Amino acid sequence: MSEVPPNSRIIYSCYYNISRDGEQFIPEHVFSYQISGSLTVNDGLQVYEFKPGDFRFSRRNQLAKFVKHPPVGGEFTSISVFLDQKTLVNLSQEYGYTAQKRHLPAPAVIPLSPHPLYQGYMDSLMPYVPLSGTTDDPLFALKVKEAVLLLLRTEPELKDILFDFAEPGKLDLEEFMMQHYQFNVSLNRFAYLSGRSLATFKRDFEKIFHLSPHRWLLNKRLQDAYFLIKEKGRKPSEVYLEVGFEDLSHFSFAFKKAFGQAPSLV
Image (cartoon, rainbow, N blue to C red; front, side):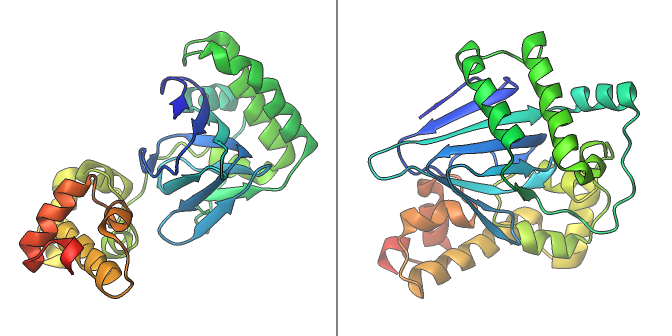
């Protein structure tokens, strides 16, 4: 596995084995190109499949699980450009771009139709990959700006997403948690994305579910794991990440405590 440093604006990913690792929160808008291998993305509502040659746009402040599949005997490679808020605010001020009020929420990941401009732009990024420029590198800043202007040219409706600088609004907490409980993120993250402070999140949560967030999340994830292992014949090593656990040993300990036997013996 290899990736350029996480503070770079341009990320080149290369994996030789199937990978489910990585942050399940999308902090910035991302413009990506699948070079080889395939990518499966699950946002809690929909599953997306991206093959070599596909382009995608991922929205900021979203939860999504990414599974990277290298081809047999080959490698998974992709290149992504992070469209940071500073660049977008500057472009908004420079060109007067503003977002209109959206009536329907956009999906977390938006497949983009192939376009010669996309291919030309992604090809132009490859010489930059070994440079590993940071967020303060003016050369990389120009490439990010170019990506935004390119997307506005080809997908003008993205303007209402790119230049929406509002923080997440208050959501229906029960609906939000039922959709996202399998995502391995902190309570702070759940609180932020549901439009609440951590204290308000915990208070609202216990009013709805009558359990602490930690206990409810643990119970839900273990119930899902039990079903997948017992009824679907899945292996513990295959399901623990899928249901929201961070490591196999913690999952096995919690499972045995809850059900009286190790997951491998169910």
